[in-house]
Length: 169
Image 1 (cartoon, one colour):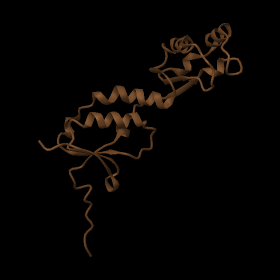
Image 2 (image 1 turned 180 degrees about the vertical axis):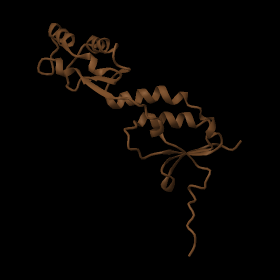
Image 3 (image 1 turned 135 degrees about the vertical axis):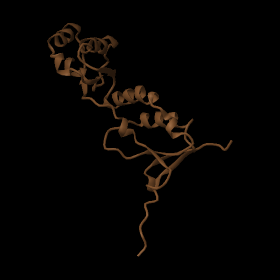
Image 4 (image 1 turned 135 degrees about the horizontal axis):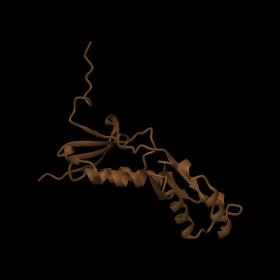
């Protein structure tokens, strides 16, 4: 019987797994529609009162996304006011949903990585993840890897999709 050899494990292929860089922290989404009349109408006096009475300490060290889940037309100052209330407690505050929050975290993190370890190597950006890695993170990773990698693929080693191949100089 022939010995089974794992050619993927023995290859020079480098795997770039965005899950390895997944920012740690509790993610929380605050929906400001909860403080609107019937979820649609902002009455300033009532809104300010709701914010004043809300327990902001529950967001200590959280990563927070502020959004409005209804089609309400909300003045910009409303989200800013919520962010000001959160500022003493939250580690990070963004406008949007949880995917926007994760995208922002990756946008800050990925440019700080030393990509020189991928110089002139074939790289595969791992596609399957158990964590909610946003598409923007994959795009940023590819952009950061491109000046370094000999080639970039996406997916798994057994079924990768080629994305980029450096021109021969």
